[in-house]
Image 1: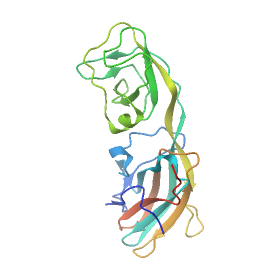
Image 2: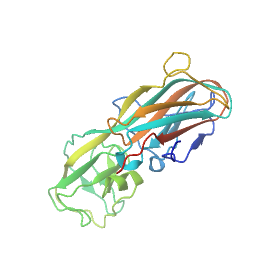
Image 3: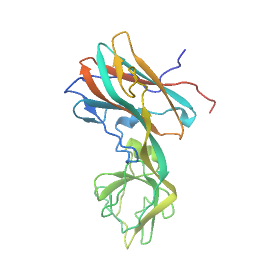
Image 4: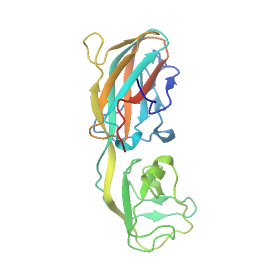
Length: 247
């Protein structure tokens, strides 16, 4: 008997040929902003492909996760593949950073930060009163040159940023904080195929598909992507812990 799902099951309202959602995670690629607290919302609009980004939950103590694919009618999927967002070492190239009390943003030309990167620290000059030298912070990227600053990884993902009441002064550089990491996609492989071809899955109102992925290395989030081969049924993707360990 399965225990409660990691996320509230969500239905992909238009997972059908020519009107599907897409999110193309690439093994080794950076994880883009995961919307709504990483709670399973589709990432973007596209053709003939879709994906869900699922929160891990359980504080990293879930060794395996079942992925359930179900539909309310006939639907053929191809290239069903799972990706894990895992932490890798982040190299921070320091550079001059300025701050604005008007926008509460930091500015660094071509900062290169992605959501989830960090922590970073600041050194030199006089920091804005809300910031302290030698303290870890997490950037919330706005564009290629500006970002908000969060007190924690969780705040960065939630979009909660520090309010800056002054600009600071002097030459201030950013640098890597305590064990900085970045999130990268890691392919966990294609789902076992119904016809012997990896990733090919046929669904119906009475026939679903379940496959299991290992939480090694431990991931922060998981994505499921696929291409819609035929059919017009709505597809839902649920994630369940196979076994919950004591935390």
